[in-house]
Image: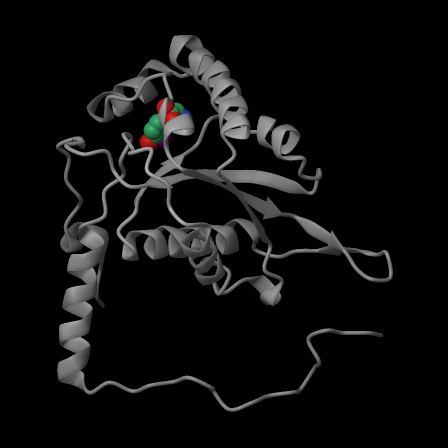
Length: 226
Ligand code: IYR
């Protein structure tokens, strides 16, 4: 049986670098402060972002750990205005239904502080949209269907790493989830085994953009040490 992950073949951990504890403290504090500075933005500048930067961020996302290392993700990076327009039209159609009836009142109440609505101009204005697909299975060279494992967990981690990478180069991001997102398969011509997972909008935040005055839970609330 052909196996691309040759069983039993190991190499020395190639890039491990040990920090001393003082450095670990500094780095962990600084990294937290850096990530704490990330905010979802909904108002983007139309200024372009070079494709190479997006490529590098996607490569970074592709380093995520995944179930059996099967890397069950596919990213479609869109800067073509015609495709962005089609996505906006399709997303706004779903969102209209969501905001005008499909969403339970409790859900709409929870969204109130974010000030969101069915209008999604950022889908055309931002220079890049990145559609993240969860790939449920793949066809092997022998034509067999190979199942992927822990797909949601794996793609979620990769998406988080993508947001981190984009933030690290000073780009604003919005994790957008028009629901349902099936239209992304049609517009982007992705096969049935790929399920739209998130639409990440990225570019420079518009000048003087505002964000909701909301806060994050503190460590005491999100963690337990035993
Ligand atoms: N998908 C809708 C609604 C929405 C839902 C959640 I949960 C949010 O955190 C934000 C928005 C929209 O994008 O407007």
